[in-house]
Length: 83
Image (cartoon, rainbow, N blue to C red; front, side, top):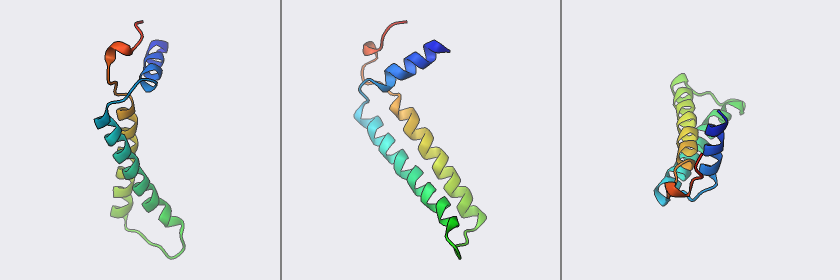
């Protein structure tokens, strides 16, 4: 378990390829859109259908996962420390 955490930490600290940086930014945008839709329910007199809430929930989960996974991509795997 400690080895997996160390590898993840070292991957987060190395250079990420440009393509995965774009995926990360897109994922953050999708997650922000889903969050905005979900938080609009707190405004009085705003009623959203269950389908819209479900789509916003899926957008939030998809954006967070895409952003997190793309941040773990490494440009040069030889830069990672050997265990």
